[in-house]
Length: 390
Image 1 (cartoon, rainbow, N blue to C red):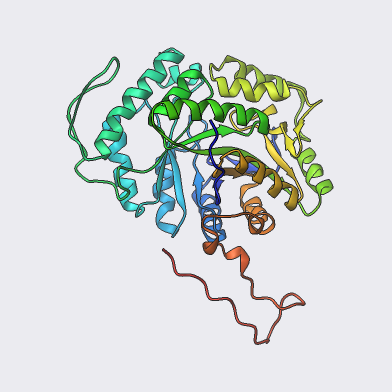
Image 2: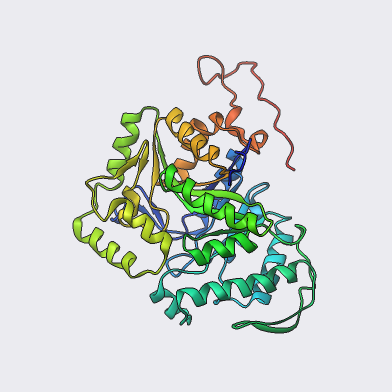
């Protein structure tokens, strides 16, 4: 089943709540996570016209809800994509948290539904369920959660979740609650997406693999009378020239040694995530063949779980690759780059002017108060009037 490509796209950035730096696999050039640094990244994303930011979840990150609560009052337009964790949170509590943060942020909350794919971390969180059981919990969780945010009083007796008289008294700003985002490559995950999710997310596989996956999701959603949005999660390394971009990619992993790569791959191998298995298969733990498609590089995935690929190239090449994914039906692009503060500016300045952005009017990257010779002091050039916040 085909779906018309979206005319406009949304571009997200990423908040590095696990730490940041210029290189992978070393503390050299590393930056500790603290509130002032996260504020800088969020304020940059807001002023540069990004649609939203993804906040990661898990034991290696700061808590995504507390981070979003701390940053939302500082920004005007920026949306926050925050995780709910079926099996770790009761659906009633998650619904109340979502409604509250949606109200406090004036409707700028988005929800990332994370089932969890690392059995070791899950057990540390008290979750002793099989892969199939976790997705059944996710189904039941979303059944209750979505009904609560629609304003219903819920009695529910599932295989894993039981509530009686559950309700949310303070409603969210967004009708029926913040939109639901979700990623997963297994059959069970795709069924959940087809039944209950608003925007299905995939990691950055080559376009032909993404097309195959999205075709399956579309078919299953259509069988249920539903149409979804689609998104992709990628890193990006853009420079003025392609040669500079590939050199920057090489520098990013210059400090990685074979032992570090092997240790990371051992951790990824223990996971029962189909998506992680697909990511790892792209590089097979080796530096030898990291260029897996035009301008698509798998080097990040040597030591980073989850999103492990990056678009690498000059601005025109990166924009062209984005348009290729857009042609597959993808409208939500979630990017990141190391270090995240500088790369947020670089991507906004070099690539975003080339993209058909849904919220292009809010980007300040298109208006600078300089003359034809650069900075002018004592001149009479006036800045372009900025649009008011909406």
